[in-house]
Image 1 (cartoon, rainbow, N blue to C red):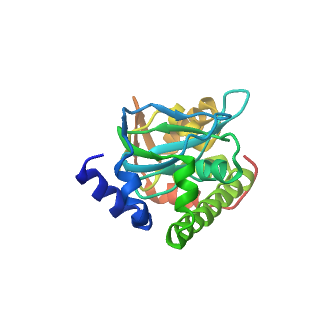
Image 2: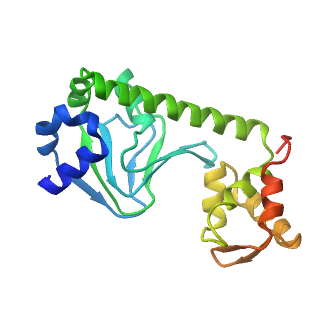
Length: 219
């Protein structure tokens, strides 16, 4: 790791200042979009520190359906990795880069040493609590909120055009592509969106917003 990368790493993870010498000797990993960084049931290789890019963490069912749990951006923490290190257990989800990504992997022994520092320990436990709150919200959405409301919420907040495939939306929502396609065509018939190849143009954001905030019900 060069000096510039070391400074950026400490600016993103200042609670690791006491480990600066250890961090400077760690290799920097750069991967292209779509790289699988870890898989379910793999042993945890360390605590990922993201410098640039983004990692999508998800769970897959035996049938192949996938549910996005959260995303790790620079300065954030991977709950699955930290849980694996805490319990010395295999990983319970998959990590995939959603953009060209640069990261440093803090080895398990250095992670445990870093936890002896109160600042880093508070950082990890604080983000652990935040991730758990996110996952609780995800569980509530999957269990109690209608799929059309969840899809409407997913489409909002990206501007007038959403560049995404039906499959990627299905993966994010934890459902199958056919369900997403069916709902998008319904949205199009009702004048809320216009569909084209890998692009969804928002035509009536007010109605989408009303649908996204609608009452809970069965999927």
